[in-house]
Length: 246
Image 1 (cartoon, one colour):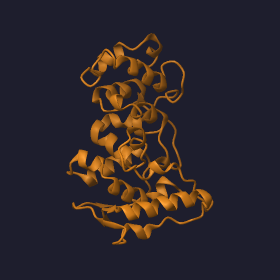
Image 2 (cartoon, one colour):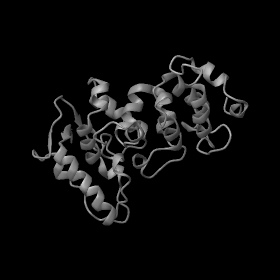
Image 3 (tube, helix red, strand yellow):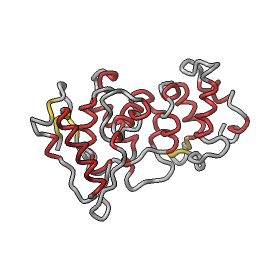
Image 4 (cartoon, helix red, strand yellow):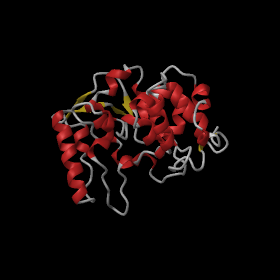
């Protein structure tokens, strides 16, 4: 069954935040789903959009599937406006809380609050960590290349509950993440077309890993305009340690 998208008000976000704090002390507490429709804690989104918790009759299998679904359901709204809509992302995080913070043996383990509720003041280092906004924005910007950032190297029982290593290293740098060319290069380096997943070994910290790539690209930002360079050029100028991935 579809539900109309709404926004959590400031009062609703405070209540949701208090629940997350309490959950860290008592993992058995059920999520306050009443906030989703409580007129004193939430409001209409202001645009026509609906969502379902399990649109395919099952839970989302990857963050890529989740991100694509959100892009489709929230279109054609302005991406910049949606990106900073704190109430919207808090409402969606609560709506999908069972997948973002799943119960195991009757208990939940909450992550840091910005995973579910964005800070009132923009902080990139926290905004990219949001478990709903992150996959939506990745798919909205990078399309097909989003797969290398949003599909885990290994299958996960709870794929929406955490971010992968490649996403963390690439999305953690704003100048790198916003470049379609860089993310396309990352996809060419680390995605395995045969398995449909990032290549084995891409999640480590050794030579040629995404963690090393993040550091190299940081140096490249001083001399290259990474937002305008072709993906092939980016991969070709990488140091020798990346040769196995090329």
